[in-house]
Length: 202
Ligand SMILES: CC(C)(COP(=O)(O)OP(=O)(O)OC[C@H]1O[C@@H](n2cnc3c(N)ncnc32)[C@H](O)[C@@H]1OP(=O)(O)O)[C@@H](O)C(=O)NCCC(=O)NCCS
Image (cartoon, rainbow, N blue to C red; front, side, top):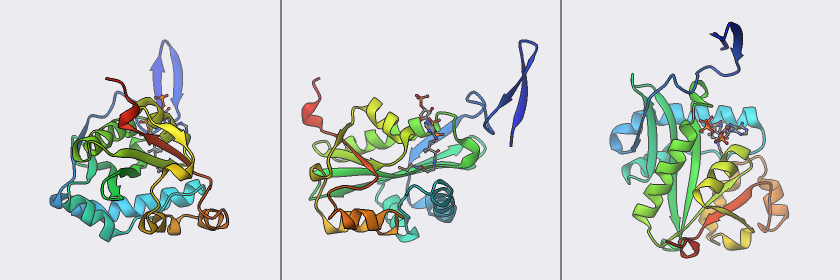
């Protein structure tokens, strides 16, 4: 949906459905009460993956349920209670690593700065739950790369990521999985970005 806004006597066509100032969001750590939103989150994630075509791993409802129950996810709503965004964390190698994954913003609320707020909140949740862990994120998306960079993540090779079979199993639903396999998991289309708390000077 496009809206037309008058500014300085000129009609300006906004390319997105919602202007940055228009929406207030409530972003909170997800809990068991949020499981009723799982179907919508999974559906929007799947549709976005199809639309983008460049690879987003699918997330099962069971996984999201587990994340919400463990308080390992962040969920965003508009002031009038519409679901607006989501992301979750997972720990690997006994808490040595934490991944930030599953970032999704509902199409109506994209380009409002919401993803940035969710990214910050999920990053803070990662540090709060796993203060000594290396935090990482895998993405083909420029938006996520920019946000990771702002939070202090740096690009790394896949050799810096956890070796857990279970972690790499998450890539099975991505369209690029055959590429990952053909490269013996050493490389794929996603850029790996890592935040190492040891490298941060306070
Ligand atoms: C990617 C996504 C989460 C961005 O959400 P958003 O709320 O629109 O992002 P924000 O408004 O917070 O913008 C954050 C930054 O990314 C930039 N950005 C947003 N969408 C972008 C895009 N498609 N291409 C390039 N940059 C983009 C913004 O300009 C902003 O940068 P700035 O701070 O330099 O201005 C959203 O488009 C989405 O859910 N996409 C489908 C799922 C997906 O791709 N998830 C990521 C999987 S790794």
